[in-house]
Image 1 (tube, helix red, strand yellow):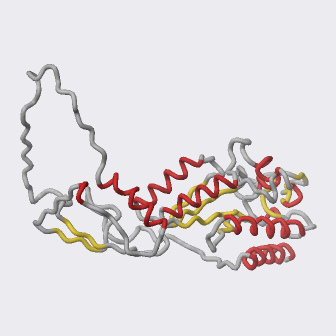
Image 2 (cartoon, one colour; image 1 turned 180 degrees about the horizontal axis):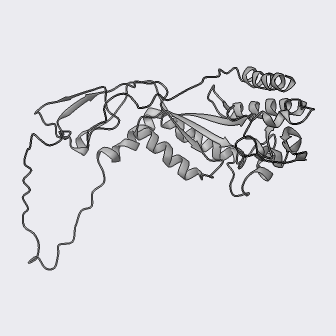
Image 3 (spheres, rainbow, N blue to C red; image 1 turned 90 degrees about the vertical axis):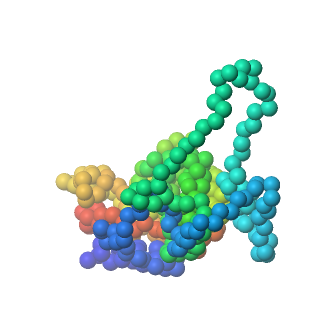
Length: 306
């Protein structure tokens, strides 16, 4: 009974100090809807109209502008998309020395077969608005470290696919790569190595890159389980799991050797309070994800103190 009370108090505390909600999500399989045919537009627009009219756009005769108030997101998106619409071309200025083997002409005949899949035509008009406000992707850079350029490439791909939330699983049992100014030893001793860390400058750079793509970054500080890496520098925060009268015993499927916060240790709450305040000062999002999964409370029950 005491164990369950301490666990409830710990979860309640984490929810209160972050003003968050605990939502339980489940995927209803199989997913509803129809599979898109080959060569379909992705992401699929809400509406698409096809006509027989063709519109030719010459790169030198088009200018993209906005009537919005000054907005750096729009201003920087325009030059970013121009090479997508009008890719650079290579031209040959030096004539070939031998013209005898040059192909003079080439004709390709494309036959229309009504039995084939319908290909998207050039002369199409589409209208689109998002069906879901939250369109996210989760990346785990704690179990397998991901360098900054790779994370930014993932953000670029998210923007191409109209995804707007980057759920960043940044710490876990395996490593603590987030470099905290408040608790620098967490990454010094908890990261895979000194090269496998995300500095405050790295985090700020990723957040800014995402912002210009219209992507919100939500960090996940996984607690009260998945905290083995915290114990490398702050062992007093973590519960030591026992089995057969021996400490530091892992039971597969039930608990590791030491992996969850000790709910009766006051320093757990002061540390979490300070770290979450630091995370909130770095990440502009109003949301911080706290994980709260796979909390194996059997580890709390094997010792009378818990």
